[in-house]
Length: 114
Length: 113
Image 1 (cartoon, each protein chain N blue to C red):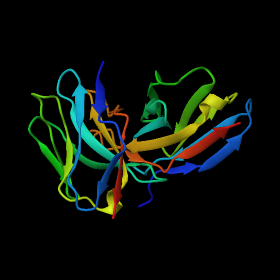
Image 2 (spheres, rainbow over the protein chains, first blue to last red):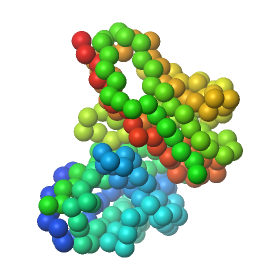
Image 3 (spheres, one colour):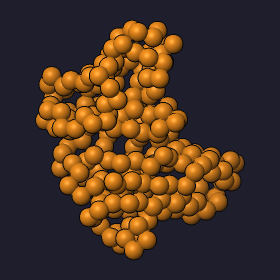
């Protein structure tokens, strides 16, 4: 079975540009999570969805960040405008809501903002 | 609030050495506890879990026991291999937390031949 698929794997952009990261969760999973990983702050939960509905977005750093999940098989994380401090690896993870704590992670999208 | 503290790395060992990575937690209620592993260039993957006190999770030779009295979930392996080199994350799922995992900072393990 295919795992969580993220794109792009690598993105280099200039400050001020819009960045869109994409995620396709595992089929049948109804919970989706966006995490950010940096050396300084470790793994931070940005937002998570249950049945396509955002449940908790308290980790979204500021209004420049937005996330959507228009259907069960697709989610986006958008940063507009991007800043150098947004440089990080962004992970998407999915699971069934009944699975306590077993998240399935994608390979991540490494973002570099110059 | 709930939190996870794990030992700082890097941990450097020779092949076949014994491994311990310490993890302690702060949480109300009865959280579930996890160890995830991240190999270079990859996402995290679940290594083992324990859902109640005194449970022992195990996988691939790794073990960890849920100790409520010491609020700990230390990871151990009797004989590490070079292929175990990775970053290890301790995590908890709060009671009723809907899979909203709280991760520790991660501990990098390097195993040399």
